[in-house]
Image 1 (cartoon, helix red, strand yellow):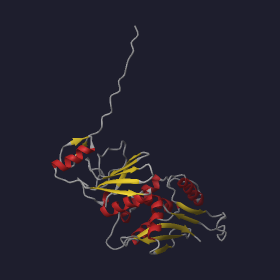
Image 2: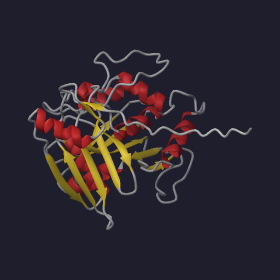
Image 3: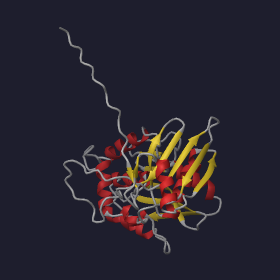
Image 4: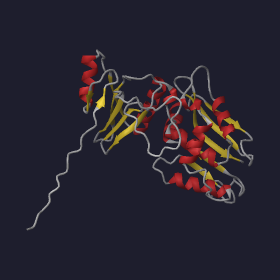
Length: 308
């Protein structure tokens, strides 16, 4: 007798999100939004903005994070929609075999649902429409729970690979603080730099020659979708485009797309250059190009490491 076994796959159950103000749970965002408004008398604020280019949205997102002292993480990315949620929203999931303890201020997650989010719909004509839910519920916007942006991490990775000492990097960041405004970047610690060093695999020996090590990092970054290396001229080579550069000269310039957009937007007003000497054993110089944004704050738009 032949027995055919049929396995029926159980439908995947969606995790129910918890209201941060009571014990109500739902797997549907719309129901949680309605719950806030009906049961807790909280009016969810929505705003809509259109963008011609994705760079404009990135600047808009950066401005929101700066003004509201919050961070958003990408949760959904398809051909026609992008979704960013508050980084505090959700439940903390312990990492198996975690060797180090949690930070003193605990997990970023509030073990509940925060409605603050941005949903970007990509139109057929290539423009972008953003819906912004502004309310943060269930937590305060404490910078101790922020993480460094991808652009900042990439910039610091290049400096670390160029053998600029951690203390010099930290001093440069501290010197950039103006007035009473403090961003997550200004709270940079050596632990942040060690984490960047580890995540970019910079603490491993790419090559006994530091120049080859930097060259390897630049090649890796050039393969990324958002390559921030604007210009690179290693030592012991000649530049076809810039014949005035000598064979022994070294130049590395980094700028991401958001920095480029801000330079075009604010560069006609005022441009500043800041040079930092003696940051490593090679006597290289770190030169920072800055502009003044609409909040009259200095914003770094490009970095150049050179001995030229």
